[in-house]
View 1 (tube, helix red, strand yellow):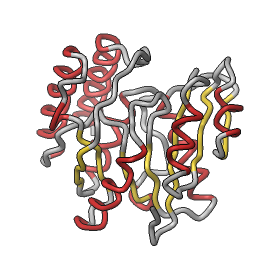
View 2 (spheres, one colour):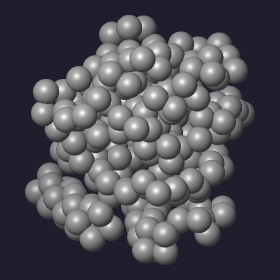
View 3 (cartoon, rainbow, N blue to C red):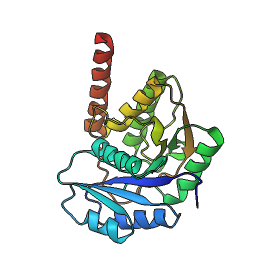
View 4 (cartoon, one colour):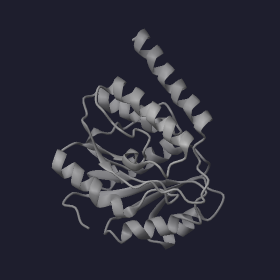
Length: 228
């Protein structure tokens, strides 16, 4: 697979030494460069990613997914890339779905394309499925455009539309906050179907804790808007 634009795949990773190599190799097989941000992992995540062919950036301590993604965006800008695709490092995103995201970007012209797992979400744990649907409904209303799966981290972004400063949320709520920021600035979103993959891995998303973080992020935004 090739793309006419300068495109790379960025993967934030924490404690993914067992899986990150396969993910990187799958992306490299599609002909795309990979940037892995090892977010303070105590295991061999960075070494495994480098051995598989990724450029590895490392945080000395765990700083959260939002900060890790911003590190990758800054690096991609500095090295002349025009767009990035974000993926998770735990094997839940299939590199074979990369062409679909790029095709959606080309056909729609949207600067942001978000993977949609909800077309066939039966493989997703029930609690996660319900949480995703609730958050996606709420965010879609606030953004005034429908995004079926706002919680999917498998995304295409044109770097020109991304802010140069990270969102206020450092962890998983950062991806939702970024969509709200982009929508407020007039960005248009598209979606592309991607597979739902759940194996024996333990998700780093806690449905209760991370839902509370999401709601806290929404409350902080509402307070800022009222004061502003």
